[in-house]
Amino acid sequence: MSPYILGIDVGTTSIKAVLLEKVSRAVVASQTLATAADVVDNSGIKAKEQQTSHIIDALNRCVCLLPRDKLENVSSIGLSGQMHGVLFWKAKSGCDWPDGECFTARDTSQLITWQDGRCSCDFLSSLPKPDSHLSVATGFGCATILWLMKNRPGFLEDFGVAGTIQDYVVSMLCGLDGCVMTPQNAASWGFFNTTSNQWNTEILRAAGFPTHLLPQCVPSGGLAGQTRSNWHGVPAGTPVGAALGDFQCSVYSCMRDQTDAVLNISTSAQLTYAMPADFKPQGSPQPASSISYFPYFEDSYLAVAASLNGGNVLASFVEMLKLWMKEFGVEEPSDLCLYEKLIGCALNQETSDLRVRPTILGERHNPMCLGQVTNISSANFSLGHVSRALCCGILDNMASMMPADLLQQAGVRRIVGSGSAIARNQVLRQEVERAFPLPVVYGQNADSAVGVAMVLCDRC
Image (tube, rainbow, N blue to C red; front, side):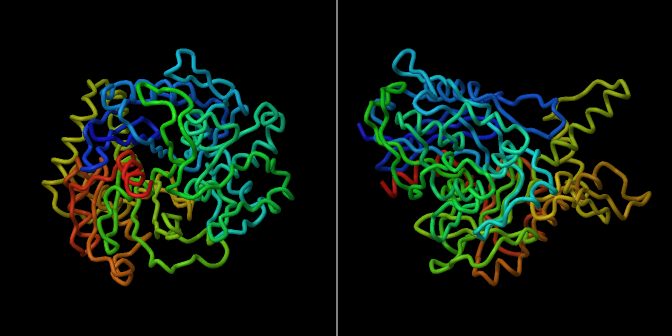
């Protein structure tokens, strides 16, 4: 039987696991499970946390659903996951293997996710300037740790290791005493120099940061170790890749050419293209810039416009409509029914002079830029106008962050459109083609679990 690569993405809301046949590079099995791990925040500090035990339980159940005979022929395991966030655990006791084939979380904190908002603008401005071309924002691991040092100084005393949730899974599978982290995830934490591949240790130490929590950096695309035990049929001793960023893996899964740009609209939205091989980011962070340069593979970089406002804006609009209906005492239709109605109305309204700025979550480069609706008249207040203007606004915001002429100057020849929001919304696809006068192709859906499996297939 041909060997398989097990690719896993530990996402914000779900776990996805795929089996990629190594020879044909075909996905032969796939499973997705919701984690249902969100913790209700009553603290008033805009915390966004998840139950680690729920995530690991969903991970085990998801992998267990894959065909056992194929799992027994897995030759390597790759993991990607949600970036920026931070999890803490105790060295040498971060999990149990109660039945020899399934590990459960133990002695860990809750996962503080990338969506965490506890680091205010005032707090971030009080932090030292990083030796990096990348800015630091709320939800970034190092910023969160510095916040905890100031506001919950005793919290970290119980833990000796820190990493992203995907780093934690790698450590538990391999039985590592500490945490290894690739530059992709390290850069997402802040205070990491991607040119030297070094943490800003001295800067952080001077700020009172517990530098013993900084993971050991290893190359993106390399191995972290081997499985310490059989895992749902995957043999002990199977090589495990060091965890990668979900964004980079999603791009890897669908960028077929260096002249492609990838536009992904799911919960949030990202537009990216590959920089030339000799590109090196220069200078200090530019917090007001809408474009960042993320480390990719083999010392290369992606130019990225990462918007916090994507499909979640449409979901918020649907929730608002449902709330209004509830307040009027009207029976609420399903989310699917509302989405279909909104799309249908927008398709019947080909254009609109109504203007919606959909940045209800702000943006990392401009957190105070909230949403607006302008140019309202008695003639453009229909559901079709509003729905069309909302979809248009999502793409206008994306184009303001990374304009079409910039893509053309960078040598981009086509845009690969992907993501769940684009896949199910024809109006968004129309607005993509209006905002970016380049050929747009669909159907090459970005998939982090497939991408991380492809990375191992190509590089290990």
